[in-house]
Length: 296
Image (cartoon, rainbow, N blue to C red; front, side, top):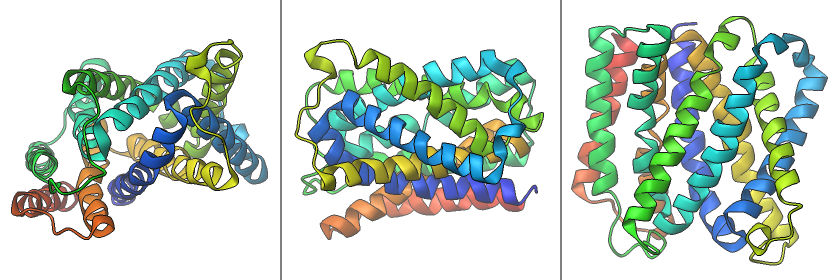
């Protein structure tokens, strides 16, 4: 189980990296609100069917309802709206840089709230991995990549990124006691998505232009919207929740924050550009740090 937890966190990284690259185009086409609404409603439907077929609803202890509310309203609804807005304005590289801060934020929260104290080797590995992530993101995309452009103010991108990171960190960590009490990660994701889908659907009834789609929905655009949502909300979030239940929260999140390295590789392959050497060095450091955590 100790080995499965870090592996699950690493797989979550791979999922988020793929999802965030796939999400950029439909997010810019639909707008943050409509993009998020379609993803939440569709992914909740998928997870509800999975949990019903597998009988996972029985693991839900509604005595933890305050944690479910916080995780839903803050972690998913507020956090993902801020993340999509950050992605639309700053592109995948800058968004991933901000989301990488989730690891130290969760680590600090876990220390204060849950009293978790990671081993020295884990702290060393986390520091090396985070340094590699920062180096890779800061210098990881060639200026010729036309799909990693900044739209608007960098300060706005930073503020949106910090808001998204803080909300998501709290949304995941607040569920750890419920997960340790036996809550299945898939059922946890379903509860979170169901609540968030309800909130955003009710808000979407308000007759305001800000809640309307910025493009006409087509079958192709719908599929492009649902796919990254399934990868991120259903697969990666459930994998991270599993890792949080069986591993130190801060260290598990470091391993789940390696997606920027993979984003750089995916963007490079997509745009047929070789990453700059600092990105390669950063990737090597991230791998080294992860190895220290997993093997120590």
